[in-house]
Every structure is written in structure tokens, then in C-alpha cells.
Length: 224
Image (tube, rainbow, N blue to C red; front, side, top):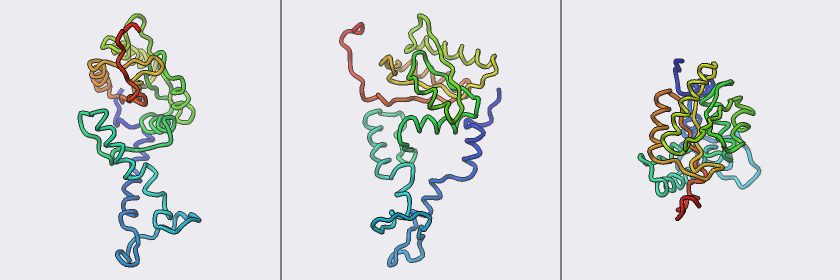
């Protein structure tokens, strides 16, 4: 099945209207000051009954997170996660929780009736987070005797993609909990590379929920 864009149809429609961030930058980067910028913008689109400062007439520095917050998070990620390519603060977006972020992802990378792949077992709220409003379905992958955190587990996801296509279900993303919820294990580096190759092969998104990434510790006895 040919996919024109990695975004959903509604995601493409939303993005074609122009970026909200760029529009806010035009305004917030050229704010009125009686002395230094008398020709700047005066935002009267929002009013708040508090101390009158230019930020109080708008949504602060934007609904995606203030520059200070995004810069701090970029430094945090780069220091602790050591990404292959350093994270740019301007590429980050904040929301009020993982539920909101999952819902936003559902709207932007999936259309109603599309599916995402999830392991079994998995954090149970993904189903409602993705399905309640975005109307995205979940396809759950079982592993039998295969260790889902090793490379061998990736083939099970590919089997699920193939079976979904046969059933007329369009898979748009594969979601990993890393570290896993509820099993608490991490995927091996080789497995993560294999997941990236699989998603590239089928032109689907790889989404990593790493909310517990800094709750990792060594276990002296692997059987403990």
C-alpha cells in the first residue's frame, strides 16, 4: 500500500496551513516597546487581569513550552541519553502528559481506522489514549517463547504487519515502551537497530515511550 506522506491525511492538512510556531515567532520576536520598538506588535487577542507585561497579553512564549524549558530539556536529553545527533531545543514540543502526547500523535500520523503495533503485555492506557478521540486501533503482538527484547522479537512485529495488511488494516506506527511497562526490561541495541530497519522497510513510524529511561539500574543476578 503506497503512502504519500509519513503523516496522516489530517496531519498533512493541518501542516499545510503553516506552522503555529513560525506565526508566534513573527509576533513574539517583534513585540511593541514605546522606546526601542514603537512599530512592534501589540497582542490584543488575549487579555488577562494581572500585572500588565507584554507576556501577559499572550500565551507566554508559546503553547509548546518556553524557550528556557525547551533548552533545559535539550541539555538534559543530550547529557543523559547521549543521542546520535544532539537534540535541538527548537525541535522539542511539550504537552501536559503522555496521554495528551499520544493523542496528538494519533491525530497527526494516523487517520481514523489506522492501527499501531504494540507488544503483549503493554501499558493498558495506550488503547484509550490513541483510540478515544483519534480513533486509532491497536494491534497487539504476541511472542510465544521468543524474547521480545532481543532481535528475534522483531520478526514477530513483521509477521503482525503482514497479517494486518492481509486483513485490510493499515499499520502506521510501532510503539515501544523502553524501558518496558510493565515488564521493566530494556531492548538491546541490536534489537533497536532492527526495529528501525523494519519501520524503514514498511515506511511506518517508530515511536519510543522512554518515560522510565532514567529509572534503569544494574541487576547483579539476571534471574533476580
